Length: 320
Ligand SMILES: Cc1cc2nc3c(=O)[nH]c(=O)nc-3n(C[C@H](O)[C@H](O)[C@H](O)COP(=O)(O)O)c2cc1C
Image (tube, rainbow, N blue to C red):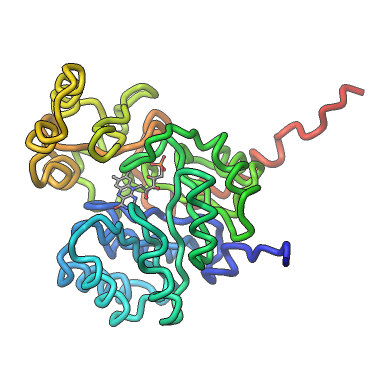
C-alpha cells in the first residue's frame, strides 16, 4: 500500500494548508471567497439553507474569486439531495460532508468527479470514511464550536490516533485559532487545519456584529458542550444555555429538550444577534479571539505566527 499522502494544498489546489470551516449562518459566499483569495480553502456552509439560497451564495463566491472553493453539507437536514444538485450544477467539485454516514453520498460524489472530505470525531469513524472512498478527513476534537461527537475526544488526543489509523490526509479541527495551534496540529500528524471559531469573528463572516463582539468578550471557560442527549453542540453560555442546563439537570426527556430548542434558535442567535435566547455556536478557543480582522489580515497573521512558532519550538530534548 502506498504510504504517500498528498498534501492538502495539492489536493485542493490552494496555497496554504488552511480550511475555513463551513458554518451554518456564518460562512456564506463572501467569507468563502475571502478565504479563497487569501490562499485558503473557503467553504460555503450549506447548513439548513434552502437550495435557492445556497445557489445564491455559490454564485456570489464564484463572482468574487476565481480560486477554488467548496461547500459543506451537514447530512442531517432534509434537503441534502437538492443542496448537492445545486452545488454540482454551480460547478462545485469540493464537498465537505458532516453529521451523518460517509457511506451515504461519497460514491455518488466521487462518480461525478468530486473531492470528498468527511468530518469525524473518532479514529473508528475515520477508518469508515477511508473505506467509503473519502479523499481526506476532518478530525474534529471536543474543543470545537458547533456540533460535536459524544465521546469528548480532544483534538490533542484525536489527531495522532486518526493519523495512525488512516492513509488519507487528516485535517485537524477544534481549538485552532492561531499559528501556534496550526504548528501543533501539524506536529501531531495533521496535513492541514480547519478553523471555525476564528473565522466567525472576521469582517467577512455573516455572523451578527453582537455575536462577533460576544466572542471577543468570551474567556476560556465561556463555552460548554450542551444538548448531549439530542445533538451535542458547543455553545456560548447564555440564557438559552442555562435553560437547557436546567432541563438536563432534572433529566428532562428528549421531547422536552426538543420543545425548548424549537426552530430557528441558531439563526436567532448567530445571525439575528439575540444573545440571550439564541443558540451561539462557538469553540473553546473563543478565549483566544480578541478582534474581528479581515480574512486577509487574519491569514497574514496566521502565517507569521506559524513561522514564529516553528522557529521557536525547542525541538531537541537533549540538554547538552
Ligand atoms: C458557528 C459555527 C457553525 C458551525 N456550523 C457547522 C456546519 O454547518 N457544518 C459543519 O460541518 N460544521 C460546523 N461547525 C464546525 C466547524 O465546521 C469546525 O469544524 C469547527 O468550528 C472547528 O473548531 P473551532 O471552532 O475550534 O475552530 C460550526 C462551527 C461554528 C463555530
